[in-house]
Image (cartoon, rainbow, N blue to C red):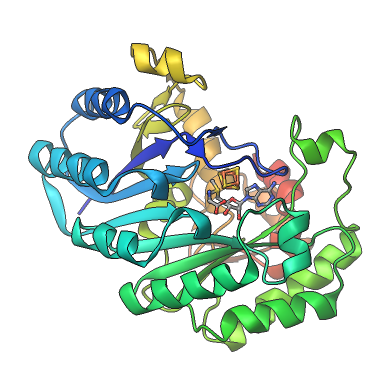
Amino acid sequence: MEKFGIYIHWPFCLSKCPYCDFFSMPVNKWDESLLEAAYIRDLKRLPVQTVTSVFFGGGTPSLMSARLINRLITVIRDTFPVAPDMEISLEANPDAIDKPKMEALRAVGVNRLSMGIQALNAADLKFLGRRHSLETAYRRIEEMKTLFSNFSFDLIYARPGQTLQAWQKELKEALSFHPPHLSLYQLTIEEETPFFRRGMETLDDETARTLYEWTLDAMAAAGCPFYEVSNFAKPGFACRHNLLYWEGDDYAGIGPAAHGRLGLVATENPRDLATWLKGETITTLLSPKERQEEKIMMGLRLKTGISDQGLSLSAIQKAVEKGWLTHEGGRIFPTREGLIMLNQLILELV
Ligand SMILES: C[S@@+](CC[C@H](N)C(=O)[O-])C[C@H]1O[C@@H](n2cnc3c(N)ncnc32)[C@H](O)[C@@H]1O
Ligand code: SF4
């Protein structure tokens, strides 16, 4: 079956974390009926095809009411054919969800929960500007684990000053929950964030590399190996929706700032709530070459690699000689060195 997913962007958080440049606003009050109508309008504009995954991202979509989530899932089920095993993921924040809310989400059909934990020590939670305590983080992971067999949490590492020992302790702690999936991101300093304005610096490359290499080994040893640069899963637990992006399949993006790819058509909703509510969206027709380049950039992030079709054999050979790729059976696969040098590897091939 062809894969097709719908991404739904929720633009609010209880507060704004100083490292984050996702489109989200720190408020605790909004008009859900206005948003509901606009989401449904966006859904009704999509071409009808079988939906294999839905992803509620943000922002903090665990702030959406279970009623609204139910309504959107119902509209999707009524408007599109859906795969019998459709994945429905939702991102949650520890302080914007509790056990009854998790139960309500499960009851309306959410079957994969992904929690933004970010750090497993109190000092770094504070450094990252997180509102929740370490105790809340632990409690939420436990609750999520009892209610969802398919769950994940995010950690941000390679924080300024973080040592390998400190990260080892934290990741071992994370693994003690036996999560079927983890997203482990190295901190990036994004322009126009408070971290950027404060002149925050990332870890030096050498230490960051050491942390990453240890992470790859530790996760593989725990039976939860990498399947994408920053994503790790036990067999069968890779996030199907996120795989759409990396494998170059079609997806629709609804909500403010959401992107979509439908064949060669790229859609981009306004990064402004009022403009999005009005129904404006930007549609661009990509050339086959542009779309192919995107697919290469995304596919090189994956353990399963990409087909070598249409790629320059001499560029592949060069990357193989540098130790960044292996080339086998008509596919190229990033090596460990290739994952570390991903940006240069992409430049070499695109
Ligand atoms: C859109 S956020 C949603 C998660 C949820 N709102 C939360 O914060 O708990 C997705 C993930 O991106 C990661 N992230 C955001 N900004 C980052 C940055 N500057 N560096 C590394 N990871 C980042 C965080 O791990 C975060 O959980
Ligand atoms: S990291 Fe999550 S909670 Fe923090 S501002 Fe970004 S989207 Fe909101």
